[in-house]
Image (tube, rainbow over all chains, first blue to last red; front, side, top):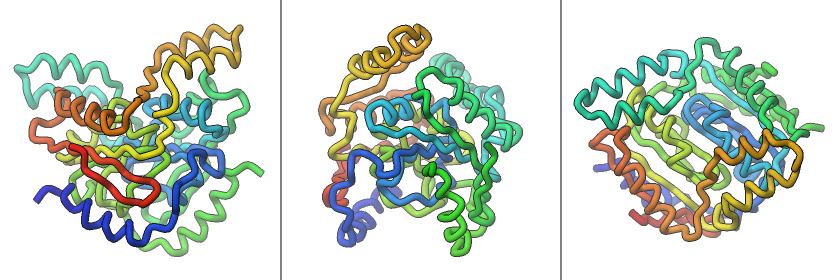
Length: 163
Length: 163
């Protein structure tokens, strides 16, 4: 059975317990958290805008950050990367080759995958600093934006501030 | 006090209760959920890769989806958009103008914002269908990928399958 077919059952139970009413369109705490798709920081619904993608990349998140700031009033960004992240284990070249080799006769795939920078990193602390710097220097962010960078330890649940 | 300064306190409490051990690098249920940064579907840590951005856009998420599929073994994608989404209320032109007008003499801003398609939509069901179609037709997704599309009702917590 397809995994997604579990959704209606689990959602039925969730909806029965649902007591949040309509979520506010604007996050109550005016900040954005950018984090990884597989290790989430524990934040209550409605507190912040939570952007999750592979590694917690601010480059992939730029469109969402601009929308959040300019239309929905956030003025702080916290970047979280985490220990044991898969992004430490591969390179864009390696992934492009893997994708092309899966269907060597399909030229469309090669063209499509070559357009993507997968934004891997070799050092966790450096990757957090790089992402914070990218935001601090980006003209699209509001000038008064506070940007902080954190590492989340998946073995203990603890966070450490890097920037 | 900056909002992010709350993190160490709330994280301290979280870490005391922490009992997940090290999260598996691979999600247990082999699927990806793409959803909005401000209205999250209730999924347990480790079940799936959860990608959150403004509106739950699969275009912004493409890099993460490719990494999830090719390196981490997922083969199903569920796209969730939600009622009351801010993306129903603006256009890319409107947002570009807003950003440029905030600093009319800064030409760097205009150049940077013109590069972004903010991927707004006028109809919720259509936007889910459009995103599902984008993935079904994208050469970078594994051929056997199942893609489904859902609407999450923020007033009731209930979900409805669209595709």
